[in-house]
Length: 369
Image (tube, rainbow, N blue to C red; front, side, top):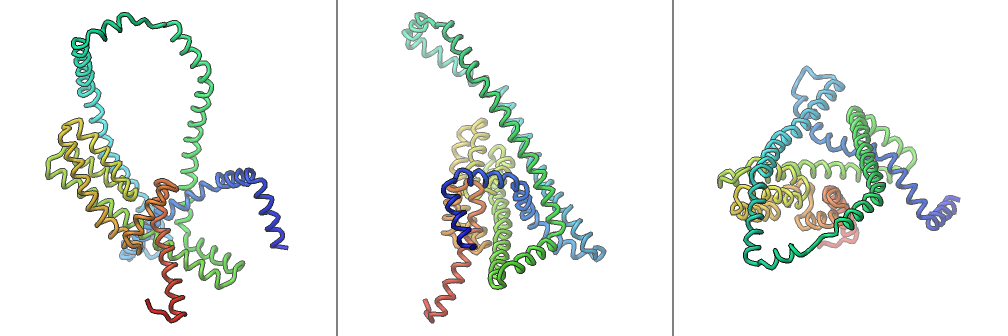
């Protein structure tokens, strides 16, 4: 009966795939705040576990586990908030000053240079001025075209604006719901883990449940190690750029170092976004130094990409350097930035499980390779 029921549902689902897809999207929309909360809880649990087990365990007065858990959670939230505010404090004032320089100094010079070039062009080619004098614009036709465009696209623009506003509001609400759910998970994570174990042991065979929990434990350790390694690598890269640019007396050394280090949390490709920001900032002050900054970036990026990143992140997840690059490339093509962050530890888990399975089969066949 179970096989027949599954076959009928599979047939109906294949015939009405659009309905199934809509139902899956609707279901994911319902649980998306809780999925986001679980992801936030997993990320926060990495520093929280270190604070609770290493820092607060040395304080003899904190013997109550609930009090220790509450303090570790508060310290973790303060640490994350402090990092975000520190980065914002370093970047936002510099960006504001840069925009002010562009608007009040560089942009007027740019407009003046364009006007000067235009005047020189008219002197060299007087036929252009003659053509412009003889060319007449049909302002009535242009006005009618603008009115028709506003009439046809005004409604769609208004709908798009409301759609974007509702999407942003929904995203903010989902984030706060997910954050509150993450707090509940972190406060009672051991109890939640026991309940999940009981559920699986109650409805699945013991051998299947043991294997499943073993894979979950391996995945948790791998993802935690990946997050730690990624943060260490980002700090190293940011410091490398800060010290190099400071020694060579480049402008905005601290801002560029912080920006590149922060964006380096995106594996491999995030630093290139930081390079674009750094080149944009430097080119306003000195275009020649912007060119040399690109050279410096390529050199540091080669050192980081070929030596530091595979060793720090690859070793933290137990994945060889070649497979780190493969995981980043495939994950980025499939899911973008999220795929880069997910596929490295996921590939490490698959690599570890495959290695264990292969070694087990070779041992059974008594083959030594």
